[in-house]
Length: 168
Length: 222
Image: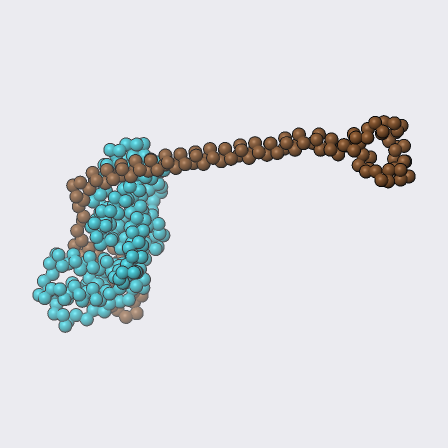
């Protein structure tokens, strides 16, 4: 009964027989299998054994749920769902806190950058005053000269050799 | 292929459980409880035989229902409700099996085989047949032998087999639930049923004949 015909492509044959038992063959394949079953006793024996093994699975019992399984499941799900809501709320609050912190940092950075810019801009007149100080200090003398070109000529001739020439 | 490979269905129209799930999506808690009541037994049956422990199966079934509830807002009926439910169950069970395997790797060798190498087929048959001195096969012994045979299958073979046997799913539906191709399911089921035949048929024959008359070859799985 369990000895198979030598030379039979057993793997393909079994796969086909299982699909045949499961009703998963096309009409053509089904006709081919039935034709072979009619002619081939070994093929028939394989089919019978597969069917018998399948039928033995009926010995496995179906599991019945306990009376309170549904109730405890629904309760557990309700508790977990409440936890999920709580966790989602916390995540949302955290996200909001991060956004506020990020926004605050951005505002602080902007204010600082603005301060730097403004302070540099405000410093500008003072720096100009320092640069022009030598001229300012001797403005009365410079006023006696008729023009800047005249002063440049004097400078070229070395008249101010020992003078600081920042004012020019 | 099969008749189960049909045009996309209007699942909302054809499947009352899809309609219940849509009510759950809309915030109807009673609809969720009704789904639990409808599917608890079916889910527990498959999971118990899949993981081999009633207690673990109950934990996993609760995890499955929790995931169903958590997914309610994103739910779109793209399959029968049962197919969708068993897709989740397959994920949950696979994760649990992986965790258990990691723990077992340290503690003890795994007695469940892989898809490609079912372990101890002949040992299981011999062990079970030696249990009964008079070879009187009763229902309890058959159930135990079948349980051992199922446990010897790889996890995916076992799942495919259980969905086929207990849920009456076709290849297409099993493929959807297990996220495999139809040929892969065909191959899984074929190998599973060949393994079962190799274990169970010799056992049944030993039960009715003298032990020395039994010389049934156990084929290697492809």
